[in-house]
Length: 333
Image (cartoon, rainbow, N blue to C red; front, top):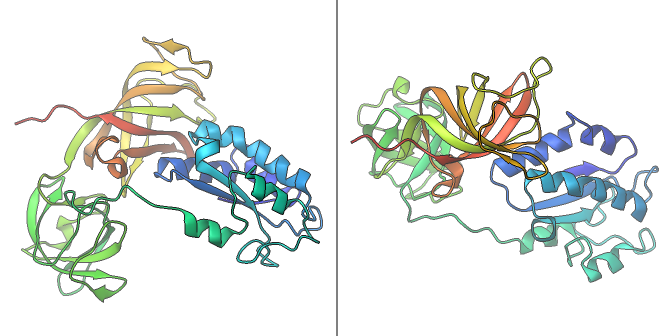
């Protein structure tokens, strides 16, 4: 998360409706569990590598990141850099320019004992991608090029040419004719890779849409109602309370769908007081709520398939709520 230390720029990014807030929120919702906060423009005449300005920026961010759901001590690291002079990006900043950083990182006070951004990124470990799990590729886009080609990112499982796949929510089965990663034909693609997939077996371009999910058995669930746990972040100007009947766009993996709030089950306010029979929720509350979607949508629960169980609710250009799907309706035989 890159923020600017320049006087006035940090403040604009951080005020209500600012980009910094939006980015941190979306990062958490989209499943980014570790954050390296890079305080850039430290060489600016208004900053001059001063520790108090760096501390001011970090101390304002900490409570906010905490409210997004980050654990500061374990999951957030702060690094001051200057992109223009390259200080602390690859090579450590000159002590004559900045005399406090060496002391700061040797004592680990900004949760990092590594001086530069690139060496810090090199030490991060990524886990939790399962290549042996059932295949899941949410479709980003599709086009025709001597057959139907779907674009997407492999979220779990491994995709190979010749596999039989099920497309959710239509449940049609097709065969995969070819797989490309980085424009190169490949024999297999693992989780985290962005791929192009040629779908054979009579699949027309109208049979695949953005938001569909390419699965192997057992396929993911496709539902119209979800029960989720969400945090209310912001509301449109003309409507400050969140009640049953509220409508917004539901965004999850690559899919966008109109959603209506059916019922609020419980709310918890900032002080931790739980209301079991709420009529409404206000900004800052965490709530358990049932949403009804306009069409049948392929999703998963957060505990089993985290990449399919995160969502944001947006309306009028604002992120109204972020949350995770906790329960799906029981399966019909």
